[in-house]
Image 1 (cartoon, rainbow, N blue to C red):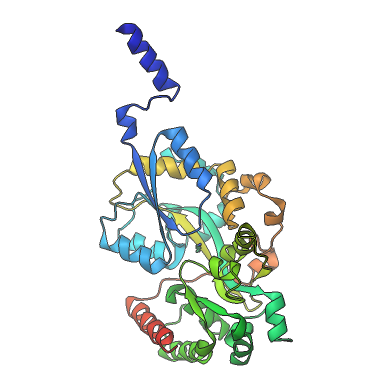
Image 2 (cartoon, rainbow, N blue to C red; image 1 turned 30 degrees about the vertical axis):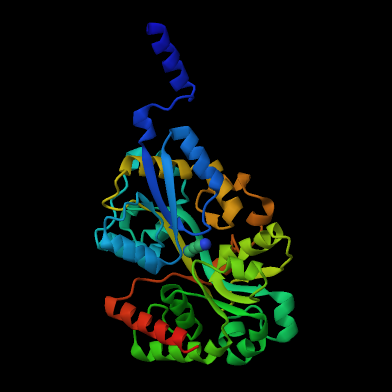
Length: 364
Ligand code: N2P
């Protein structure tokens, strides 16, 4: 009996048998689509014995709806610092992070964490996962053929109707998110990206309606597929999703030469935050996961896979050279100076924006 007991203990130690109580440890992660290195999840499960259920969302609107309804069952979520993360903090939907359980918070770049402290004073509720900008994905060869002379470095490529009209035959795709598109249009028009002034919103609507006939598709969660398949040659999209497209096309043995453009007028920069819902069923496992993800080698693997920048400087050595040198992923200081952040607008303004978005989409 004793020998059997010892053999069992040895088998458990070697990881051959997972004790029943460990088998029940689980973690429910809710993250953006195309936003993880699958190997990171496998490694976490092997190292900790915690089983990960991984779900994805494709817009901040979807995530926020689930969080505010409560009882989502999720333990880790990844809201963008503004407007969603800050709004969820104010609504009491997140719990403060137990810093004692997160030694790897020390790996985060203090300058970047200081930027998100504007949304989360004292950085109590979140750790930066990845960050990126929202700009244009351009298939340069196709676009210049149809619209020679059109400015490839400017929002005018999309927002000037005469450009959009010429480019339309090779396909224009737009992110399907009022939250993520309207601030860029406001900024392009020279208005405050958070403006709730009816006149400014009307100007955005006019700009969008003027190019509506030339938009082929709306994409949720990014336009990787549309760009990789060649079904679109111009997309208003998240930086890393554009940058992932050529690799996706290669996997599918199609060649596409898509370039990410951070427009010269400026682009929205977004920090996506690892956070724990207030009613998370497995908060200890959530902390273990966040701490695991913040290790330099894990973070390097994630950036290598999804081509978004992370906020762990020590991960740099593990990131492929073509990614650290890609100014789409790691913008130069000069490009960084052209980025802007948004703030959460009032519920009334949010409603006005989503009504306008519905009118814009259905005008097609
Ligand atoms: C989705 C990536 C979303 C990034 N593929 C939003 N900041």
